[in-house]
Length: 249
Length: 294
Image (cartoon, rainbow over all chains, first blue to last red; front, side):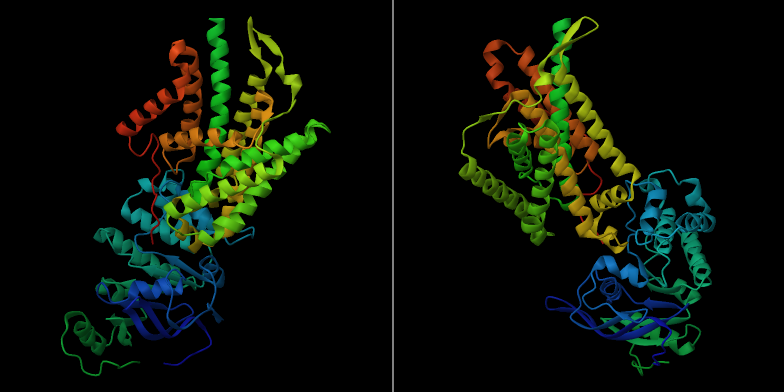
């Protein structure tokens, strides 16, 4: 794996433990500027732990994380987004008692510039349903709309990297298709995307690169159109014996 | 009829004080799940600040009360509650008792346990006549001040960035942090506001009773806390409304109960509270999220 200087996220040798359980072991990967990288794996593979550690929500046992070239060692949770990485967490975690507009404004917490209003308009243009419901309490939105809101909120910080944890969870197929359509649109604006997914088919369709994870380790990485990725992916998922498990691009 | 109007105005003014106290407690509970019984000592210390300075000038005494309560609130946050941030609510509750006892006993050691007379805001002790009803000017001022502070706090929470961050932190602290909200900033702001509310309550109470004593805040806070529970812990409008009705209820009980039962008026208020909680265990306006997620 080449370590080019353009990386917005660089993870080296990351190990995460909860008491005696090792959730992630020696994970090393990076996300380049404007790239969509998908981490795919079954439930319990360690995807969420990985994203949580990057967002400084879960502690790590060992390893190094750099966001836009700056180490996150000792960086508190509230400062991660200031380094350029925004999190769209599992279950969306929108503020249900606040309005749609307020949720989006919270996404711009770290900003003091004068362009917040025009960025709000941009999010509303991207997600017209949010514009229609801007005064409504966010808890009244449907699951798909809440996911759009969580993504819009993440974008309001003007991140270099948007991290999404299981955006497909609990969404109807139509809403799901919309969400993934938006990811491509977001990337085209130069925002890199790291998405953790169980729904492999979706992730394969949009990702530039996929990392397949099982039992806390990457079993392989590659471009989604390579046959080999598919075959080993099946192995990681369904327990078929794998050959060359440490293969990488 | 006139008497009813007088009792009602009295009840509303007392209800306003309890609403302010309950709101102060509710703010802190919202951002850090702490039931802060040391709120009582914010009121008490503000009362003693008035005692120290009321002879010089009224304005000076009010400023001193506000400063005393705000500084004390910030100091207790920094010294006692910040190291315990994220601890479970029981631990926080016990620590707030410890802080409260410590402050109360320290005060008794320094100034003694006996009540001291304060002739604060004597100009408000007179009666005014409004459409034929004679009302205490102080009661009217209390109502106006309470309304003003409730409106001001509401405005701060609804219309400012800081307020938005505080409401977000109250619903889901970790997600708020993930968006860049700084925990120290919102929590310190909540403590400062609760200090200001405590100081206002102290001014009104001292003017009404003409006394300061080391336990003056405690009874208020216990009753106001009952109000926050009725309103629904974690809901700020709920806290203010719950506090208001508990205050109003206790004054109306005083006025309406047969004489023999009046000493037990608080018991009747608590019975009403128990009934509310049987019907609505989470309070009248339950908060949407009392749990941390992510």
